[in-house]
Length: 200
Image 1 (cartoon, rainbow, N blue to C red):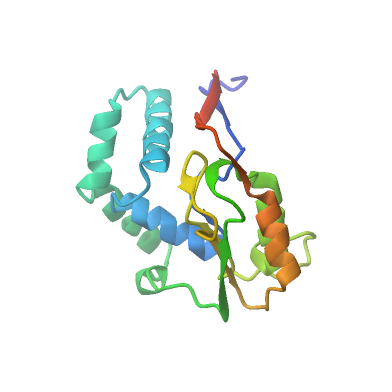
Image 2: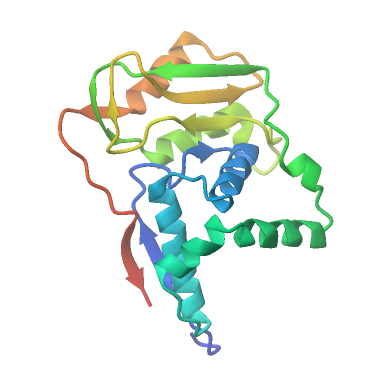
């Protein structure tokens, strides 16, 4: 604001990751699916809300429905591909599946409704797989991470797959148990707002 720029801060609910994926390539693949119009309704609507806010900062007024059309008609994906190509990116590599040695399915420990998937804990968990750095000198494994099959508010049966862990290292039973400990399940209906507050 001090230099005459419009600014907005969006405070979001971090009781779960905003999307389904944690990890470099996994998040890119999820973003592509959203740009194809194939994303979960909650994250797709949230992204349209963010786009509406950003357009408003540029004095462009669009409805959520108008913005969503760009996801559904392929224009958003085409623009993304154009941006990648303009920076020398490899579109063929962009679309390839993730390459890891192991995909570990994480089952629910009980029947109920997902009440929390704390983003901080799962972010740190993914970092230990190599998806992030604890210190600057750490190497990144761009393929590793987590994909959630269930999100907050979803019903789940005991033994049903809640998430898949993508890793190039072996996952011990202790790490599976640790993951399950972070998945909060109760028997009540859960409601969630991705955007808690907009500060302008």
